[in-house]
Image (cartoon, rainbow, N blue to C red):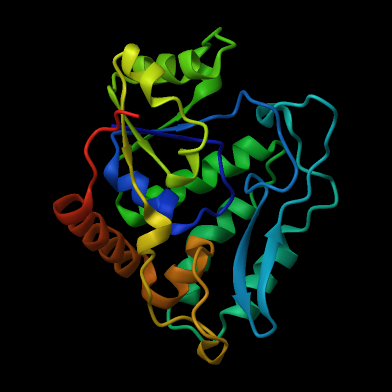
Length: 244
């Protein structure tokens, strides 16, 4: 099974679950970079509520994700201090920073390199088995979106696409089936787990960066949470291969 997503920065738990559910997680980096997504930012919880952690980038019209440079003004030390301040009272803040600090401080020039490095470290810290694959390295010359997705699946040797429920409005499952690819919807947003989160008086905030979960539970605890949720979903709620 394969999951395909534009390479996210400090991803949410739904992405991290795919690292356990799939053999391959393909990072769709040879598509245009767009503002307002999760390629250069994600959310954490602070004393003032949920806020964005953002990697400043330099943008140009038509620029691909793989060609998006990190802005010279990006301050990794400031981001690390922001994380520490937000989660200073959590039991696993040092454990989280042990993985984040060397990546954020590595001096990456390109956003895709930062994200791939961070995702590689997150996968290792979680003990997840999926292989990370940049789609640009596959050199697939196909303009049609559906045929391109099918080609990515084929290159990874997968016939099943693990897809987020948010793609239901545009993913052409019939056309994918014609190319030998079936779809399984993961529905993660509907089953997001609740855990003892920082700043509990604010109430639980779902869909934050995995940083939030790791600071609360540690890497091993986060991995156990993901494995339990995935096993329960596959056993009780996993839908059949999509036919429409």
